[in-house]
Length: 314
Image (cartoon, rainbow, N blue to C red; front, side, top):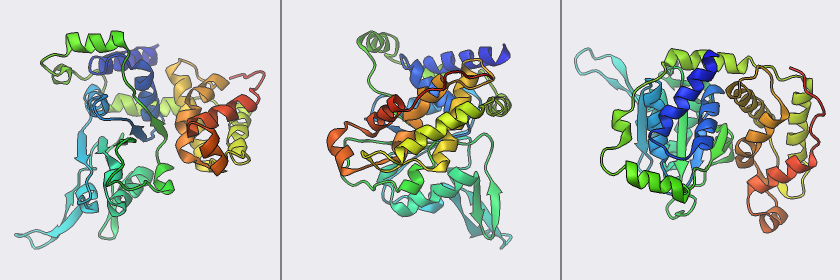
């Protein structure tokens, strides 16, 4: 199948720059196919920027990166209007977000005012300026990073903004075998410098449409509802998953089914992405904070309690 060849080619191309993280790459590709954004929460040096750059180069996309600091202003992100010195007319100067792949590096170091500049572009894929709107290029994806260890001088991301991210992922350290491969193969020239495009932006848009045409039947939709509803009545969770979260889980599950070469969703697709889609949308109760290691653990406990549909027909 054409889609299978394209996905394998894309993943293998990204792996030239990010070694030993196929499962992480697959989830990033799933988020892209689902038209969603990703929050990468991890320590420095594990390849966050490398992955975004490799993804954009692999599909001939325009990649912009902003190192978020307290002095970054919304205008730096979304652009601003100015009077042209010659024509004396008001013209719009494009901001960094006018691209296909936008990396907000260490997003929690930017002020809440700057963070708010991303809300509209993440939800509406457009910029409002001078009483009008400017659509962003398609496809468009925001990938934001934050360091969970060093929190001095950071600003907590508001729940409304966390809810805009389709997935939250952790890259993690490579195992010994893969890190030895990194040490042996990446000594001098960065592999990104020789990375060539294997797909076009038009291919990505087509694959996005195809992935979201995957069927999620009544049993799957009821299964998703059972999961999100369970988060709303769990003693370890103070704030459960919203309807937007349920829709996000369905979109991500469809993308995973598409990656796995099916035109219908099965429960395994839902379970595969549930923790990545739902955990960052939860707020744990005091009991949950004391008894659980993470919000991901809360999601996994919910999955253990919710019954899996006995049969799913595409």
